[in-house]
Figure (cartoon, rainbow, N blue to C red):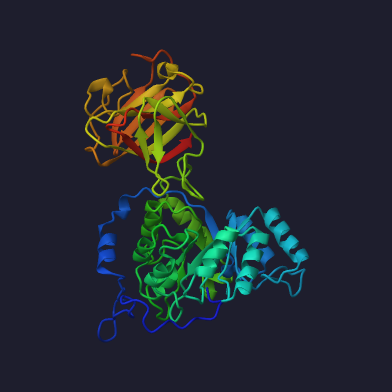
Length: 493
């Protein structure tokens, strides 16, 4: 976006913040600048192609619609099915309100008008920027007060001060996030490592508004930038461009149509479990006359590469980190939840961590890891009622996790009834992936991409009967060889 005055960068910010080195003579291929050899190697070593892309919600940066009013923008987003917007300061509010602009100077009547327009369109105003917050407490409070008044959760800016002491205090007081944007040079924050140096170690509500297109303009590999800022990305202005740099004819294009490595970026965001919006934005004038076609193409592309389309992530990050919201525990022991990684670790047992939503036909996918060769655990399917005793084990199926045992007790078995077709688990210490589809009585299980179960489920062994619907649960067996779980997704059929 090109709305706040560019800030001249310091002559030297970091030793690695030198201008990109281009090949001698007229370059035939743009020379991408690498943040560091370590990050370059880390990106090269990441198998982005194998990452199962999670579903991200879409949003729009209103700057794309700068030729339209705020109200017209909301109508267009409603038509597109985009349910969130990041407003920018200065957009004309509505044709029927001459002179009114969307910014901190709006009157009480104009604020009420904007809120009503958002409600009518069914669009959430999640962000605001890029906005000049100034250097003084008074100027910053004006922006924070406006954000609070409008229900804005993320303020996007490029702070003039290097000292974030005041900003950090206000972030804590208002509980509103500050996302630092990266306009191209000569902007102060044009380099990813400059953004990182300002947010590293700060309150978790101070992070990056990662604009992949602007990094491409500055010859930076956006994958390296995203990886460097892992855990600090609070907002994403996702762009695709026809090429790196700013040569004539190089411009923004729909996602997936350029050289912005959009799928890789989605994979990197998935690996980081980014929990914000994918915000669409176009800078070039050719797009903003009618941004609708480009938006539709972009949305279609992302949906085409999204693995977890239609799934609900039922172990996810809240505002304070990952938590077991919606999960309950029956019996001895418990599951620890790492608030930073979302990894569950079983402790003690035998107990059951069950999710409080009954499902009938479904697909359940998750990763699990055994701490030792003797790890014993399982995933329970269709627990018919809230477990208040151990009786649930006789009325539901357990998909076994136990590499030491064989046959009907081996990993991938329907415990005590049906053995897996073949062994497919990875050694202790490595993550495995289960895909479990239960439709009617038909149970189909893939373990690490291999079909290990294709069976018409029926009672047997310890299981007396089966319910057509119920809860799913994860078993904690003991503390000596605990199981680990992560990335738990479910799709009702």
